[in-house]
Image (cartoon, rainbow, N blue to C red):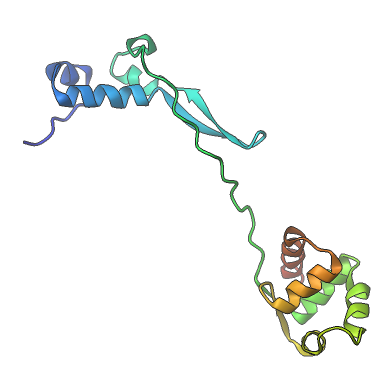
Length: 160
């Protein structure tokens, strides 16, 4: 048997006492709150919202046992993913703008540095964010992952 369409309060009243009526009333009780993101406190907030029940002629007091939903954990969105590959020029220009180029040059001239890293620094035409060499340089410079992301994002904006 197909489900009854419930578009008005009259449609709902016509099926009073049925499982469909109980199911729809539970749906309406669940519609009493909407979740909104509170960026300041990095949480979700349940906000009272009577718009759906109002369309069917109900008021909040018609649902005395309804309670706000359990709030999920807010997972912050990644606001900006840096470009994953930048040219040699972009990388050096971004390091220069950040005041780090001289440090990297000094680091790469150290004989104790991995020879492959020195070769990459001197000959690579582009640098990849996920490169172990880039990760090692960032660590040697004391850069966090967020700072390295910001450096790649800045590099991507530079044009010759």
